[in-house]
Length: 93
Image 1 (tube, rainbow, N blue to C red):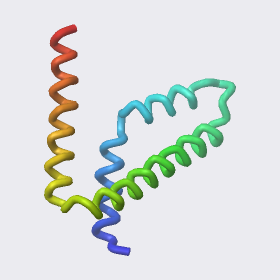
Image 2 (image 1 turned 180 degrees about the vertical axis):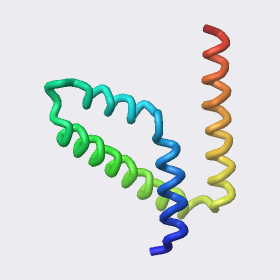
Image 3 (image 1 turned 90 degrees about the horizontal axis):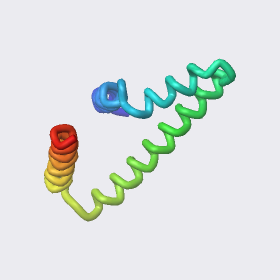
């Protein structure tokens, strides 16, 4: 295992997940007095593992057909599109 890659991926995903919808939903479930904290933690952790596994599998499949540079351009354009759409909706409403 490449420790540098591991730390880069960990830090990137960790920062990206802070304060997102997933963390807020988990916080709300855990705030319910009737919810078991360990149940909420384990369910959320397994959901994130499953979502990450799908991402890794999809990334491996896409990488067979596209080079890394094209993938980076597509991802960048996608993020810009989502950002522009979010900004447009905030200004329009």
